[in-house]
Image (cartoon, rainbow, N blue to C red; front, top):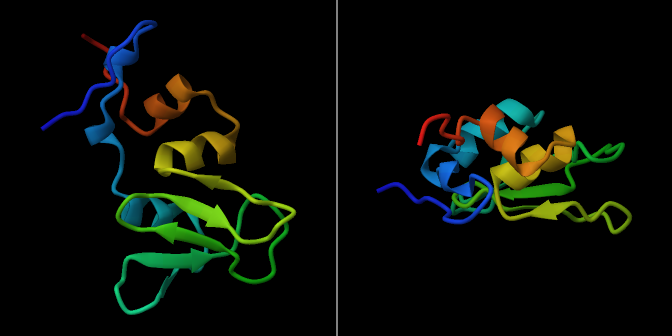
Length: 106
C-alpha cells in the first residue's frame, strides 16, 4: 500500500513507500556499519556530520531513525529522508527525488 502525503505545493507527489530500505541505504552511505545488540534492529557507525574517530551514530534499521551521541553534534532524524537532507544539504523535494520517492507524474 502506498502512503502519499496530501497537501499543497505538490506534496501529493511524495511516496514514502518508494524510499529505500534503511538497511540498504545506510549500508551504502556509512562506513563500517556494525550491528549493535542482539535484535539486529540497530547499528552504529562513524557520524558523517563531524570528524568522528569512533562509532557515535546509531541508526534504527527498521525505521531509519538516526542519532549522533556526541553532544556537540547531536545530529538526529526520523528516517533516511531526514538523513539524506542533512548530509547533502538538500531540501525535501530534492532529497525525495534523489531517493526515488518523488513521482514525476500525478
